[in-house]
Amino acid sequence: MEEFITAVTYLLVGLIGLCVGSFLNVVIYRLPNKMSLAKPASHCPQCGYQLKWYDNIPVVSYCILGGKCRSCKKHIPFRYTAVELLNMLLWLACALVFWDESIPYACIAMAVCSIGICVTFIDLEHLIIFDRFQIMLLVLGAASIPFDVHRPWYSHLIGLVAGFAAFWLFAFLGRKMFGREALGGGDVKLVACIGLLLGWEKLLLCILLSSIIASIVLLILRSKRKDEKGREYPFGPFLVLGTAVSMLLGDRLIDWYMGLLSGAV
Image (cartoon, rainbow, N blue to C red):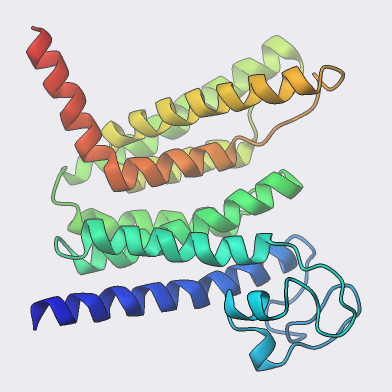
C-alpha cells in the first residue's frame, strides 16, 4: 500500500509539474513583453490562431502536431516543451529528495525551481531579472526556515546579509575599476534571496558552482565569438543552476567534502 501511495504521489507531482511548466511558458513570453498573463488566451504568435484545449496539452500536443502550428504550420520552438519537461523533472527531484523529510519544504523547493526557470529563460533572452521574482523568492526563503532541519535560522539570515553585501561590493568595485556594470543589480538581489533560502553554507557552494560553470561556458563562447568580447552575458541562469544543485544535493556535497578534509587530516 505504501508503494502504491508513493507511486501515485510521484505521478501527481509529475503531471502537475508539467501543467505548471506550461504556465511558465506564458510567463516567460508575456512578462517581458508587458502582456497580461490572463488575456488573450494561448495563441500562435505567428498567425494568431487561438489554441484549443487539445492543442495545449503539455508535451503531448507538441508531439501530435509534429512541432508545428495547427493553422499556419509554422515551427513551434522546442523551448516550450523543454520548459515543461524541465519543470516536471525538477519537481520530481524535489519530491524524491524532500518529500519524506518535509512535505512543506518539498513544495517550497518546487516553487523555487519554477521561479528559477522563469528567471533563467527571461534573463537569457532579455538580460533582466524582474523584482517580482525576487520578492517571491524572499517569501519562499523566509517560509522555508522553519522546515530546514539541517541548519539553524540564523544561517539563513547570515546568507541573506552576507550574500547581498558581498555581491553589492563586487558590483560597486567592478563599476569603479572597469567603468561599466560588472554585475547587474538583479543578480545582487538574487544572491541575497538565495542566501536566505539556502543558508550561508550552501550559498557558498552555490556561488562556487555558479562561478565555475559560468567561467567555463564564457570561455567557450568567447573562443567562438572573438569579435564580441564586449558582449554582456547573464549570470542569473548560472546562479539558478547553482541554487538547484545546492538545494537538492548541497548537504550531501558538503558532507562529502568535509569527509575528505577529515580524512586528509
